[in-house]
Image 1 (cartoon, helix red, strand yellow):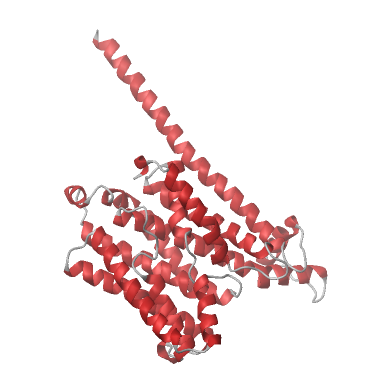
Image 2 (tube, helix red, strand yellow; image 1 turned 45 degrees about the vertical axis):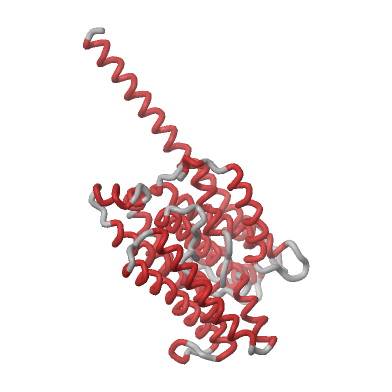
Amino acid sequence: MSSADEACGEGTAKDRMKEEYRKYTFRKVLFMLACIVCLVILFGYSLTLGSHEIDFFTVFTTLWDHITGVSYDIGTPEWTNDFLVWEDRLPREVIAIIAGVGLAIGGAAMQSVVKNPLADPYTTGISSGAVLGVTAALALGITAGSISGNYGIVANAFLFGMIPTVVTILVSRISKTSPATIILAGVAMSYLFNAMSTLILISSEAGKIQEAFLWQIGTLQWTTWDDFPMMFIIVAVGSVVLAFTSKQLNILTMGDESAKSLGLNADNYRLMVLVVLSLMTSAVVSFIGIIGFLGLVSPHIVRMIIGSDNKYVIPAAAIFGALFLLTADLIARTVIEPGELPVGVVMSFIGGPMFLILILKSKKGVW
């Protein structure tokens, strides 16, 4: 074969590879765009629901008018729509999106860090620590800095939720930072904190036990704009950090030895990711309680569709997680009349069977 024929063959192979890569990338982008479109539609529809129904397109018109500073006379239909959408319904939907983003990204990052498909944002024991904080606030009246009311509960949930993470990091640092150490330390902390919570609740009044139980389930029912700033800032910053270090996250999944040979300090990077995702998870849990399965199932579904490259998995999981939680919340609000179910219950009903299906149909290649 002549050199010209060889060059032509190499050019054809390169063109074929480029075409395959374009299709590979297009599929990922298409999946994220489809999720965004579904998210916008579901977001708008959720804002129409309530005792006073508002038209789908009127919802977006009302939002735009509010943002651009349009004002209405008190008591007019437009003023009523603006008040209901902006003050009553929008905080719930916005916080659902933020929580879905935070938990889904936390699950994707945790699964990559510990290289375990069963990991989720609560692997380090954050949920059990937060439960102990809420239990101490409700049953014993012990709050961080003597903060009273709901803010005391939120502060307790956040601070106590971080304690298992700190202990897990210290244990893994003392012994050796490895995925197995992190998981085992998290399991140990979960059992310990759950035991302390149970001990407190045993001697508590029935009303306090019910309050603690309802918080553990997870709900968006009492969310307000006051919950927005802290949750948004922590989740936004954490998401940006993890998205911009997705290349290092990919390297970490190859194993510590491979990571070190490529110039990545696996131990330090793993601890940094643990701190970031723990802050994100604590910020979400402290306001809305424990939403199970979201951080476990969402990354699995995303990986099965677009592969395991964290450059795409993290943003796709964020979008899908927000869509997933909005869907569960919509079901929670409409499945019974009157009233609603806690969104955590609906998420468990959806997530449990879905996870079993994913296990049966999972591809080893995505890990």
